[in-house]
Amino acid sequence: MFKYDQIPSFTGLQTGRRTTNTQGISVKFSESSTQAVIRAAYLQVFGRDVYEGQRLKVSEIKLENGEITVREFVRQLAKSDLFRKLYWTSLYVTKAIEYIHRRLLGRPTYGRQEINQYFDLASKKGFYAVVDAILDTAEYSETFGEDTIPYERYVTPGGLALRTNRVGSISDKGTQVDKEETPRFVELGEVKQNRTEPDVQFRTLQGVNKRREQTKQFKLTSTEDKTQLQTVIRAAYRQIFERDIEPYILKNDFSELESKLGNGEINLKEFIEGLGISDLYIKQFYTPYPNTKVIELGTKHFLGRAPQDQAEIRKYNQILASSGLKGFIGAMVNSMEYAQTFGEDTVPYRRFPTLPAANFPNTERLYNQLTKQNDDLVVPSFEPVKSRMDNTKLPLMGLAMADMAIQARKMDMSKPKFIELGRSFANGDGQSVEVGVGTSRRKPARIYRMNPGMGQEETMLVINSIYCQVMDVFSGQVPGEFRRSDLESKLRNSEISVREFVRTLASSDIYRRRFYTPYPNTKVIEFLFRHLLGRAPATQAEIRQYNKLLADQGLKAAVEAMVDSPEYARYFGEDVVPYKRFPSLPAGNYIGSIKADADLVKQSWSDLSPSNLTGKSS
Image 1 (cartoon, rainbow, N blue to C red):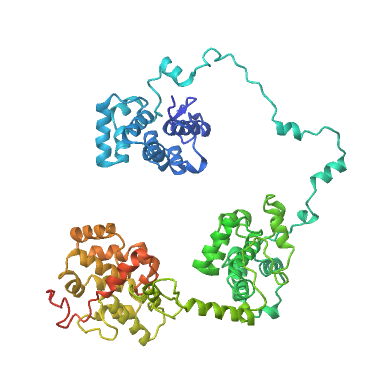
Image 2 (cartoon, rainbow, N blue to C red; image 1 turned 135 degrees about the horizontal axis):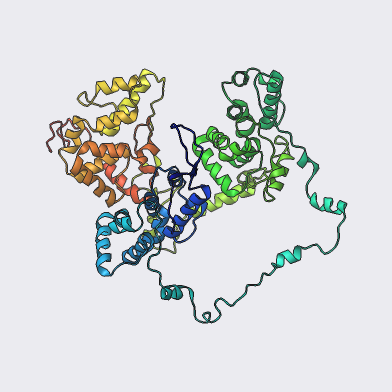
């Protein structure tokens, strides 16, 4: 039984006046005893030791500081994802309740009646309510209190024997002596002969050149020593640009960064990051090369090594594609590896002398070749081999391709004629493959973005595109009744973003009268998806979700949920006007979006519209 006791005690007596002296005071717990209690809690709740990454570090710290009790610590362990995965998700409810009851109360359940009580609670309130109900019972309080780890209370000799004894091992139990055998690989690695000192040194240094011992590290300790500052700056240039950068090459490109570093406004890590996103670095190491070569050079310049594996290349390739060179450099400079290796004040250096054997040869080979003189990749980029000549321009190849094209356009007389007449061509020689589902997939929508410093005409184009998208009107035919002059003024003055403009317009009275009042909720949801997300609803689950939201909280809540959704933020952000996305949607949602877009509500002020400004259906 483990009990957590953090009450200080006095080992000696004091007489006289009260004083703040701590002499004679001891504490009944120490770091080792605290960790023993925590380990006992993990063993009781999970049934085993957990991995380091699965431990609840924050809860352990709170327990050690006395901010929570042992009962609360056990509660947080029982509500963790690991416990839920072990004893809830993978089991049916009755078996899960039996396991949880034994782990938290230290005894099995008392029959079906007790299981039914927790089963009913689980069906109504879920897993966490079952954990709270068990830990808040009077039985738990009387047995374990606030500071005792739960333990097995119903262990009998018979039960213990059933757990440990197996057939054929009862008679031999306690009589076997384990013999310690030396592993075979240790025996094979033993040295059978005496070796001389030169032989030992040769074997120690085999495969490692002298440069392993000749790594110079440059560290900026003080900005007051200008000589040391210039030495560190030139070392940074050599590391990032692979050569000395003379003033006649630099001109004034990096004078601002050097000045800020000398004045202490930025640290050396920020100076290195500034060099990485400079125009010179982009010109020398980003523009001429494919992404894989850029990643290899980036790890060489900023982490001092070659890429570890293809998984790391895929990770940085995704960052390069989504965030550009600046995001890629920032991800490396702000990584935990950079902080642990170089910190804030050390220039990155070649680290292959200290790397594991798996990455040592690649990094050594990478540092032994010059970027400008060698395009070979240390880590393969799967770049296809290109011929020096265009094969399609060769006479024989061009003639063969022309003959193949003629043969492809000829009618196959071996098949029925109606089949050949219905053939589709993707090259413009016949019927388009997309006729019948709409050819809009070939016509990407124009995207309007609100950028700082835009002119009056460009701003007006963005505002009109918002009205065209949200209010479903033709471009250049926005009626005055639809315009919101207050929103337009705020958008011009950068007081609100395009997202706020769309949110307010879709929640306005004119939108309510035009698209909400005359139609049932299902049609309203279709309108909202088309106007705010640029597509039709993909599944019935989406329709049910927003139908419930419309019924319970109204139009404004549905608009808020859609505009604040991750999908809206991913595709439109704060400054992009929503647009028709169905040309790039999957096939499952493409046809539905095409049909929904064909059912446009245009010119609501005319008699031909299905709705008008008064909100009555025509």
